[in-house]
Image 1: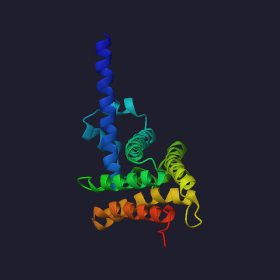
Image 2: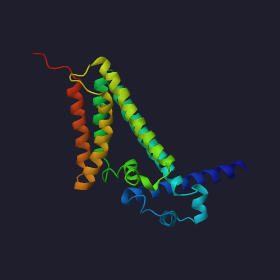
Image 3: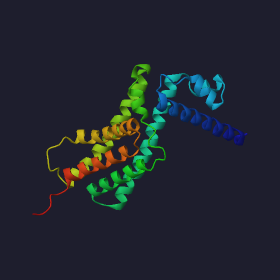
Image 4: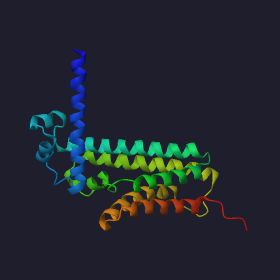
Length: 214
């Protein structure tokens, strides 16, 4: 009996993941408003009751899409920034290495970055309930806090060469990534995102590195 339940649970989780995958691809391609539940159901090969077993409505689907997207990005940041710290004990050098790795990761995506789900939802925020909007805000605040924590560690060892608001500097990385995605897609140039991250890296280096000896 337990083996049967585990099989059913595993199948249910796989179906749920498949729904989220299809819905995310559709939202990134044409927006949330143009993504219909019927379309997702058809591509997933489900009945309506099968879909509503997993998600009671479109806002419930949006909430899980955001959670899934944030978790995926958090894992990526965890891996990249951990690698940077493995390669250098100096917080500035570790961050510069991590930004280089992040840029390379974005540049190696076979068809370019598919887009930012948070941005896609934000552009149509009136379609969502308060819980979805708050979930988006929490995710952005969480990423900005992560970057601010890194910058705080750098500033303790390498005081900035010019007065700068570290909150704004932390926010800037999220802006660079989202802006780079938009630029890459708008101009059909996959290298734009990678280059923007590398430019942010140069800004960080100039802001915190000691001036050359005269």
